Image (cartoon, rainbow, N blue to C red; front, side):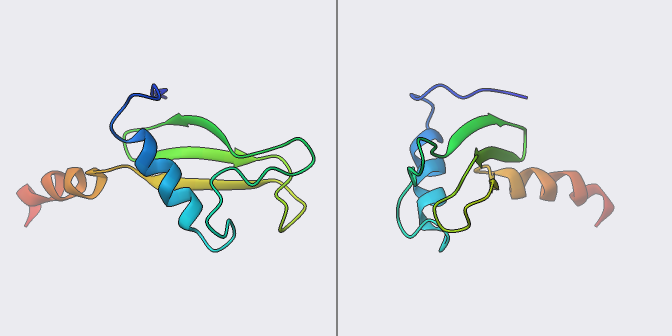
Length: 82
């Protein structure tokens, strides 16, 4: 697991994509009952976020946002097989 700094080039893209999901209706935080979206870390393929009590569902929600270039990594792994 890797933790991105707020100055990382993917940081703003990650939050913009999170806000774009219909569940969030353009809001990257979705503050509700003192809770908001939390960045949990990143793998080589995805950014992991969670909300302990989302205002739409009133339950915990999890989002896995694909990292920039993750699909390109898969293509390069598969290219010897093609």
